[in-house]
Amino acid sequence: MIAIIDFGSQYTQLIARRIREAHVYCEVFPYWVKSEELEYTDGIILSGSPTSISKGKSNLPMVNKDIFDLGKPVLGLCYGMQQIAHLMGGGIHRGGSAEYGKTECQLDTDSAIFNDISKNLAVWMSHGDSVEKIPPGFEVIAQSKNCPVAAFQNAQKKIYGLQFHPEVSHTDMGSNIISNFLFSICRVEPSWRMSAFLDSQTAKIKEQVGDDHVIVGVSGGVDSVVTAVLLHKAIGSQLHSIFIDHGLLRQNEREEVANTLTNLGLKPVVVDAGDRFLSALDGITDPEEKRITIGRLFIEEFDSAVNDFPDSKWLAQGTLYPDVIESSGGVSGLADKIKSHHNVGGLPEKMNLKLIEPLKTLFKDEVRHLGRELGIPKNICDRQPFPGPGLAIRIIGEVTIERLDILRRVDWIVRDEIKPGQSDQYFAVLLPIASVGVKGDERAYHSVVAIRAATTNDFMTAEWTKLPHTLLDRIASRITGEVPEVGRVVYDITNKPPATIEWE
Image (cartoon, rainbow, N blue to C red; front, side, top):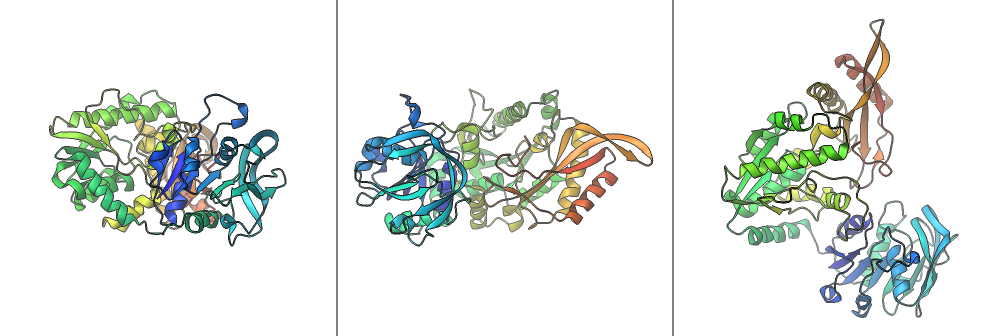
């Protein structure tokens, strides 16, 4: 068991993911965690943070200093390293040594943390502060051109600090460095498997719910389906599956979802709420307001479903860990909020149902793995993500019946042309502009759509997919030929970051 102490870094979830990839169990704790809560751990990792020690604020997020007296191996990353230095008698400097992006580091390969790592290594830096003075008993084990203390260690106490981020894919051999900490320094065993999570979560759900009944919202996406099947495994007939058709689904999706859920034995109740959602979205163009409005209506629909299932006390949602990080500032509450997710935003102050979120510590790829453990068919487990707010956030600007109809037909063409394996996620976006063109020798002034295709391992970072030009040409020709309301097609070539995968 490895404890990750969160100081608000957007990379905290990636640290957890790298550890789990190594088949080691980990949990994320807020920075105010008490040392006695960490006594059963095998190692501690201190995350980065958007805050700055050098600014000298009295309310800086600081870990309890006595965690260093537990005798547990500690690894500080970026702000975590600076905090080790600050708390153990070193000094922090701001200015002159800031580094952002890929940087060449020279490593001391005699250190256990750098065992079998190349001496010259390209790493990912993202810091303004740096360690100016190392604490007593520490030694420098890596340097870069602008950062004389790129890493340090107190090998006797097994305390290590890295100014760079080994958890991101941009750092060469970053996973190897993390593995060195786990297996050479913490001496843990690679024994954690998704089957263990399934067993423990099933038992936890049974204990948490007891004899109560649970309502789960299912959309047909992998997150909600895995949530429903997991709950059904744990509590059986105490679960009631409800499929809210908010009128924002893709072409033929309502029928496909209902059939899928029925085949999985979930017996969904289908609620036709399209008119209500469209009415509530009338005139709304702000993406955050769209998400909150849709989230609020979802909860209200489930609240009203209590009348049909009076024994229900719980509402289950397929919230994932990245949703929590992006929506609420992470475990510590310090990370910058990126956007509200329908699963974690828009909840009314007085909700008649208690919330249960059995997947909220998992990443997307882990959810797919869990689905396979549960026996869910491959075509569902490998389905590309589709946002809970549906096409509403792929229509930039106001959502209307006419614009939904246009996007549905465009989206159908995109999904028909791009095949599984060519990209991890792909879809169309309807823009709030028109473009001049020529159709049938006449001047035309029609809508513009953007095609988005992303390649990713974890959906936390992504690169735009380099689709063949012949394929893009065929997609554009089909869209402008088969959807007469569209006169121009563009292709999004922006990575995540700086963009998100969705446009809204």
